[in-house]
Amino acid sequence: MLSCSKYEPRFHIGISQCSEDIWRDWQNAEMKLEASFHEEAQLSFTTAHDDSRRQTQQIDSLVAAGIDLLIVAPNQLQTVSPAIDRAYDSGIPVIVFERKTDSQKYTAFVSADNYEMGRQMGEYIATCLGGKGNILEIVGLKGSSPAYERHCGFHAAISHYLDIHVTATLQGDWTETTAYKATKQWLNGESVNGKCIDVVFGHNDRTAMGARRAYVEWLEGMENNTSPSQLPLFCGIDGLPGEQGGIRQVCDSLLTASYIYPTRGDLLLQLALDILEGKPYEKETLLTSALVTHKNANVLYLESEEVVRRSQRLERMQLLASSYLKELSAQKAITVLACGVIGLLLIAIVLFYLYHRGQVNIRRERVLNNLWNMENASDSPSAFSVHEASSAPANQTGEKTASLEGDVPAAFKFSDASPFINRFREVVESNMSNSELSVEDLAANMNLSRVQLYRKVKAITGSSPVELLRTARLNRGYQLLLTTDKTVSEVAYAIGFSAPAYFTKCFKDEFGMVPGDVRK
Ligand code: FRU
Image 1: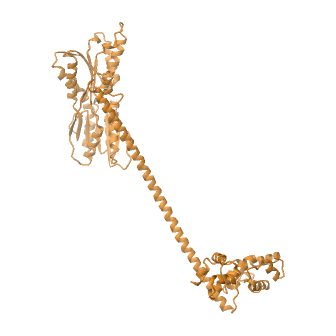
Image 2: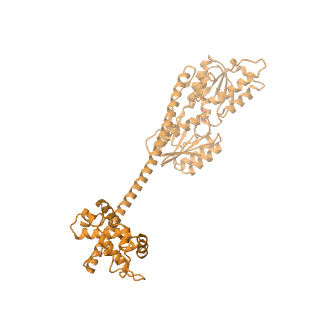
Image 3: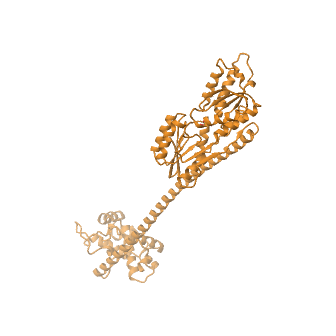
């Protein structure tokens, strides 16, 4: 079972084909192409390979699978009809096409007129024969309605010609192989003189071509090597387009005539959708058709080529459209993803900004608190003591920890009682405005070498002398900004920064805000 659907289908249509051959292939392709314009339709095809029992089972399975409508070409009238009746009785609309069922249980019927086709072929052959001659007829599958109707129509026509005789009627089954075998057997039969046959009428083109193959072989095998020009005329029915079709075979003089048996898969699918959508529809549709002879075969072939080209172009367009649609939906997914990522980024930026602003406010508040504490504690505040919290807990060694962990280096974890640090503080504070002040100068002031000073300060405070100097300068800068009217540049110079821009940068690194923010 083959399924062809791209989107969410609303209608599941089951197609039960009696056979698999070139005619069915054309028809199935037409249905698929038509369905590609109707995203609401999902098609499931089955083929019974000319086996009525198999078709019965397949119809029952399609119904069990929950199809919404059945399109069926019954292999034979009687054997398949009960399954079609069951489908119809279960409430499923049924379209019977091309071959008849023997009950009235169907919703719509679509076909060309098989009797009329047989009749017109009889008339044509009688004209070719000039009203006189012998015919070999090879009929279609026994029990299938087109075989019966084509036979009846044909005989109705030639019965008016008294000098035309149907020498033999062989049983075929629509296949080339059976026609070939039946013809060969008949030609080789003892009582038959194949040369007496003027026209072979096969009920379809494949049958006529099978008989032709048998005839060619039979003639070639004859002792006096009779030339192939003594072949009878071969006529069939179907007149399919394409390289392998009957129209081409007439063009190539392999067949003398054929009759177009329209496939119209597009019409079948449209009818199915009309029924399913509750639109008005014709219960019986008679498809018009035409004889193919040497006179019109070339034109018909060219036209059919154009039709084939157009439907191939359509198929390509369909493919393009569906790959474009796929691309569109992929792009849509990418856009949604990108929007999601951008959204998340924006949220992250806003959260970061809010967090950062909160931190700045906390820092500013803490610095202000410390300044306040410091002012309460001393009339002449120390730049170091800006971050010393009077409430900070004492550690094991009795040292006070700075209240601004993270804001201020561990340099501020020193003991009030440390004479060394007190001395260092005095040296730093008294030289703070000197932008040239170096670690060597500080060391010299403390009567130490640069290395000794570094080791001692680092051991007690965890920070280097340079770090402490820088922090002390910035803290003093903060105080000056808060407590004086000095400009930012004046403050920068006052605390030993030779470039105000560099002061602003260091200040921002330290307090998370620019000096101007302190004033605000
Ligand atoms: C296709 C086919 C045609 C023929 C028709 C008769 O399956 O065999 O060749 O005309 O069915 O029903």
